[in-house]
Length: 216
Image 1 (spheres, one colour):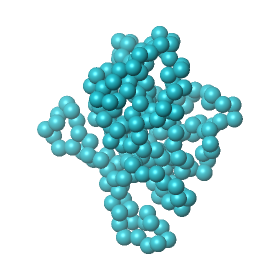
Image 2 (spheres, one colour; image 1 turned 180 degrees about the vertical axis):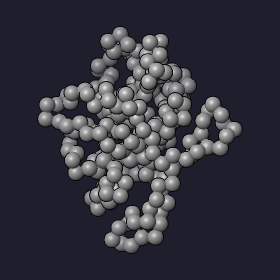
Image 3 (tube, helix red, strand yellow; image 1 turned 90 degrees about the vertical axis):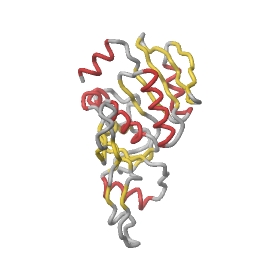
Image 4 (cartoon, one colour; image 1 turned 30 degrees about the horizontal axis):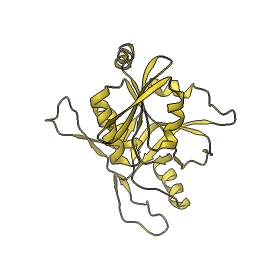
């Protein structure tokens, strides 16, 4: 947390990401003022919120786009912290439309070993094999594998203590699954929830979390 506090004191920007226009338009309206910068086709809206520097990033949909946009932002803007947000598909029966899911744990659910199965459970026999995670500080060492990534506990606690903007909405903390896939079958959604404990799914968060983990 000390590194984040130091970065905030030095006025490193807070980076907030969204994949689609509908996921960033409200954020842009909330900025005091901003201008747009283009990096290799990715849009970064540089502005302030209550006098603090904030960058809103449009990543476009998908894991590769989100990773590329995140890497560009880390390289060019050195953000103090990164918030990836947007619309997700619900896996947990506790979630309802309009609720907020905070990702305490994030997994890439395309990193699975697909084992022998039967028609009753297409996920039976599946194992999470994890992503290779390198360290820029020591690139010569072999990369270690991580099956999940985790949000910073102190930042997560701040988000948990924020009131929901809608009085009837709920804030739930849980596990987000990401992949270049769109799950629209209720049986598979239920099985993901029961097998891996996922609360929701999207197509970006895990790749962003992996790069944040790599670069601290």
